[in-house]
Structures are given as structure tokens and as C-alpha cells.
Amino acid sequence: MSADRTLRTAAELAGAGLIPAAGLEPASRVAARYAVAVSPAMAALIDRNDPADPIARQFLPDAAELEARPEERPDPIGDLTHSPVEGIVHRYPDRVLLKAVHVCPVYCRFCFRREMVGPDGMGTLSAAALDGALAYVADHPEIWEVILTGGDPLVLSPARLSGLMARLGAIAHVRVIRLHTKVPVAEPGWVDEAMVAALKAAGRPVYVALHANHPRELTAAARAACARLVDAGIVMVSQSVLLRGVNADAETLAALMRAFVEARVKPYYLHHPDLAPGTGHFRVSVEEGRALVAGLRGRLSGLCQPTYVLDIPGGHGKADIGASALREAGGGCYLVTDFRGTEHAYPPAGPDGSQSSSSDGR
Image (cartoon, rainbow, N blue to C red; front, top):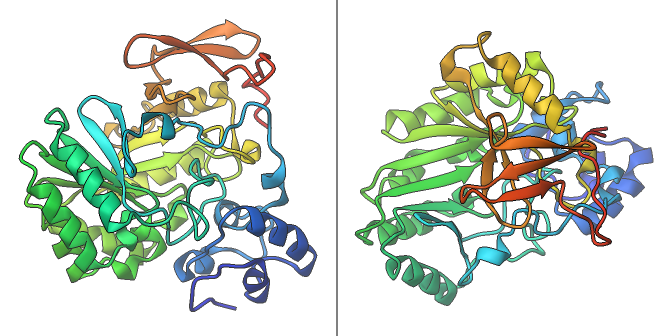
């Protein structure tokens, strides 16, 4: 059975044949805790005969999400720590995140902002809050780049998106605008002439970072959506999360990076999974991740090489853990250096001061 609309409840997923009757009750408990949405494009990719289907694993609620671990935290990368005004995260000197919306076309089961997004999350910025966020950007001339994220900024209507882009373009020191989105794979039909025009309304270089984690997501429709953006002069880069049961094997990871390049999307970030609540079943060990990324070198074109990064818990920023930013500290733990040169323990100490090993990777 194919879905002709976004599925948002466990009952709707069961009705579409995506979860068995026996899975309805646990899926309902997860859906009561975390947002669920599976778009028609994603539902069509799920192999209902494969209990380990990597697309299903990304979007269908799993009872394992209700199992929190001591090292997990509701704001794993410290957005709130670096939020001077509502809607802004100013972690790095020359760029800010602008979170205009906290809704998405689909909800990933491993989302690091799962406590903030969804119908019951932080919502869409009010007009007054958006004015305050843009005033903050205007008042800080060191901000060279604004990154629209959330949530997914491409859920905004073309009219609202165009207005926002134009307001950003009117700030002289904002020279680059980047948007992080899953829309080209989750709702490729939304990437139409009106959306492309809206993205170009700023009169600034625009970069779109596409989030996809498995090569099957790069369908013909998704590639066509990417082509509409790239042909309009919008540069595309990728971001993916290294996920157990989805892409944490050499063959799948290589196919994903090649699929990006074939779609004219430059591989950019491969994220080590964040310590979001109830996502332990997705996490691989740092050793596994580094070995997989090292295996891409030499076998794949340089165009296909992403940077393997860890968002240091607590809001200390990203570190390239495929390189020298990370060193072993014994017992399956590491010291990772942030962009200021400060070392941090990973995993961080738990509430009781104990430190969990990162090498269980189940």
C-alpha cells in the first residue's frame, strides 16, 4: 500500500503496512514522546518485507527510543547554551544558526534536536522573535554567514522564505547564506520554480546542505530536485550521520558518497551520532567510524570524501575526529580538541561523575 500523504501516527503507519499489528502499541508509546512523520517519498522507499530496511530504521518509531542512557542529554550539542536571543545560536565567531522553524517534512529517529522539533516542539518563530533574531545578526558585524536550520527551513512557503532571504540579504556584512534541509529527498516536488526563486531573493551566494543517509534516498525525483537547485546557481553540499543499521558499512557509505557526487552534491560532513536521548541503538564506536572513513580514502575519488566530525557535547563545536583532533585516553574514552584548542573528554562524564565507554557501539 502506498501513502499519498504524510503519515503522522502509529495507527497511520500500521494502516499503510509499515509496522505490524504487534508493533502498534510500542510505536504509539514512542510517537507520544517524539514526533513522527513519514512523507510519501520516504514511505515509498521502505521495503515492507525487510525487517532491517535502512529507510524504515531512519523514520519508523522503535521501542528502543524509550531507552535512555546516562551519557545522553536533551540538548546534546549545546544549542541553548549559545542562544543569545530566541532563534539564534552563535557558537562560532563568524556564523550563526537561525532557527526560524522547528518542524520538518519527516522526523528522523536519531534527531539530535528531537526534544525541540515537531508539533509539540519550539514551533515557528513569531514575527517579533524573528525581528529580534535579525536585529541580533544586524548588530554583529562579525557574522559573515547565516545558516538557516531548525527544523527544516524549506517547509516555509516560497513567499515567507523569499521575505526572509531578502531581509538577510539586506544586512551588508552577511555575505553567505546556507540552508540545511531534507526536502529534496523527502518532498522533492516542493523544490519548484517558486522555491528556487525564493532562495535567490537574497542576492547572496546560497549553499544548500542536503541531509541524506542512504543511497536509496537519492531517487530520480530527488536528483531532479537537486538539479533544479544546482542549475540555478545554488551550490549543494551534503551532511550525513553515521548510523548503525543504515550506512555504517563500507559498501553503503561508498555508494552514498558516490550518489551525492553524481547528483552534483559535494560530500561535506559525516557526523558521528550525537548523544540525543533514546538514540543509543544507532551509535557506532569512534573506532568503527574512523576505520570506515579511512577505508574511503584511496578506494573513492577525492570528490567523495566527507569530513568525519563530532559535535563535542556541551556546545564546544565540531571537531574533525578523522584527523588529529582526537586522541585515546584509555578505557574506550578519548580527548577531543575543540576549535579553540581546549580538550574535552568523550563521552562526557555522567551525572554521577562516571564516564561511559564509547566502544560498546551495539
